[in-house]
Amino acid sequence: MKYLLFVLFLCCSSFVCWTQEDRSFYLFSDFADSYIHYKDGRVFQVRSNYDLLRNRFKFIDKDNEIKEFADPDMIVSIKVGERIFVLVDRDEAAEVIQANPRILVQYLGQKRIKKDLTFGGKTETASVDSYSNMVYGSGDNEKNAVLAKIVCRFYIEKNKRLKRFSTEKQFLKIFPKHKELLKQYIDDHKVTFETVSEVKNLCNYALSLN
Image 1: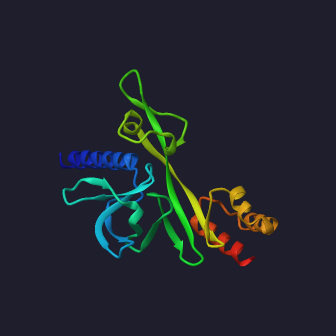
Image 2: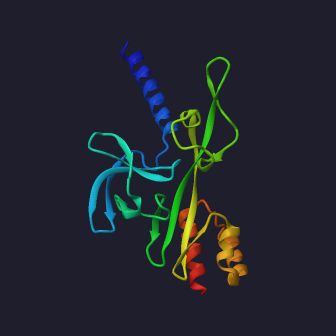
Image 3: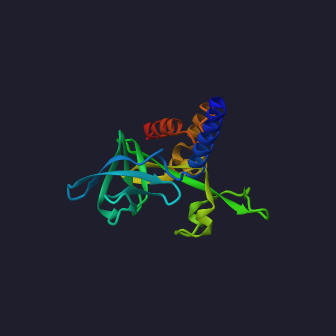
């Protein structure tokens, strides 16, 4: 009897873990203690997490409700543990993977929609779209969405401006004078634009050529 209960407990635990993982749209496994630094010098400590589908930070307030920041234009940076994020748009954040020269990475969630079946079940559609194609809110699309994968969008500081790229083609356009050398580096080092450390090394190599 004890053995049966133990097996049932394992099955239930596995189901809960799978459901939480399947439905998680956040970068971190849980809301973590964070320090929000404002332009006027104020610093707030809250529990926050990054919503991968809405591309913005959310926090838990004193009433234990999940909310978005009302004044993102005032935020300088968000520190979660040892990781630092800055805003690259009005309320979209990117992680600082190198301070000087500045290299950032933004994590973007891609969703898959689960469609209702005739017998009441659900199945995942084959197509995967970025959340930018979805409407904000709690409509049916969002309720039935699952996180399919996380993709990276990078930023590199050049001539005191942040240049954005996600692919090899976009990256090479930033450094047209050294296109051939950079293509050779990418081929030799088998750089994939889904691996942060590889892209960071590529960026530093490109910057060293100037």
